Length: 621
Image (tube, rainbow, N blue to C red; front, side):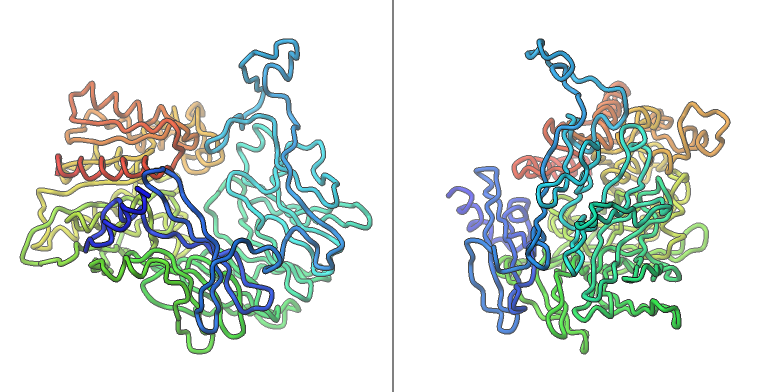
């Protein structure tokens, strides 16, 4: 009840607060009902006092918007656990494959507490390797029997990693068929087809060396999936490949200069609808193709506007059911008319909140970079912005490094919340972001402290000329690659900024190379290991682009945030940066979250994060 009382109290506010942000309803679509009449979705709400979320299930009638609460949805939507003919079933089970614990090797020492490894990949994302693997079973048969592989793929794979063929005679599944050190240095996942009648498994993507994921059939038996070309490059261009029932294969997006987020087949199987970042937003696209090779594939952009289409749930008649956000609104479910390109909102989970909040003005601003390119920045203004006043301004540094900076709605790095506290936010689409061409996206790799840093400074310098910007009160904030950017700029900002906030940022590249769990990432983005003195590209990264090399120039307060279960950018990165700041006499503070990973997921932890974030800005900016 305490959590509910807090929601009620906060709803009277006219600007966003941290508590209000974490009291929002979070909408997650599950699917379209079998009769094509309803959207099934889950709605999660955080009880702040209890520090947990509560989930409810709903169905929206697509035609009239009528809402009903459900106790469950079994039978309402197609289940991936059953083959289309209903004759076969699939399930995912955790299987012990590799001995890891001391008692695995020494059963008589059953009270020992030790883990023994002879390969890398001994931990991943936020979990230590324990020898257990998720395996896919068909009719009780383990398709990965005895193999140290996962399906779904880890750490983020789900039921999109497997699909039945339309005739129910085979199943396609994705896995990275590598183990240990080979796994840690590679992104090469493949699609495997298991034939139920023969028991034979075939690698459908043999020789395709990057990620191959998200298999999906159309009704005619053609298979589509997402594929990256280069092994080790996790942010390579995501292509849509199509393979006909007869085995003809086509890269349908080969000539398109962008990258794909997600896709679905049209109901008639003739068209693919997909989402992709474009010019600081995520939009809907249509792909038409000819597997006989008589015509080149055609891609059309269907939606336009300053918003993100986050996911395509499915097609119902002439409409696509999608989720949509913008920087002033959390995700809701919409229907998109394929003929008129009009959206209509279906869910209204947070109308009462947002109707009572003053929205921030969000505008595009284009700057010319130091190498003569046009760069977009999103600028978010405080509610009731008055150009006659002067405002403290934050440069926001995006993570990734190749993550799109679009009209997303975050529950931590929330621009609406930052602006509501009286700050202008400048968020540049700097080098390394998708949505501005493949070259722009790829050019950040092996150049971390180069053009991308000049892009950041271009964005803030260009905006700081406005009379309503208080140039004596500029802050620099960011997480992950953005956290690295903060550390780097703290030593190379020429006194532009008054304060810094870095969350889970890379501070020391040698230490990072020696402890991050995805070695392919540092191999690709830095160019290789620090001990390879003949590799000039890698040596340049460790020499010129390592933030630790510029600590002697730090001269402004810095707040450092670190997750204890962050194995991507491990704990010693934040601790070393804090220790350096303290020993140099720099005003600094450390927020250490022992149970959080690269993100802050706990409700009360997140509220401490928000309160400390704004407390620091109030004290130092």
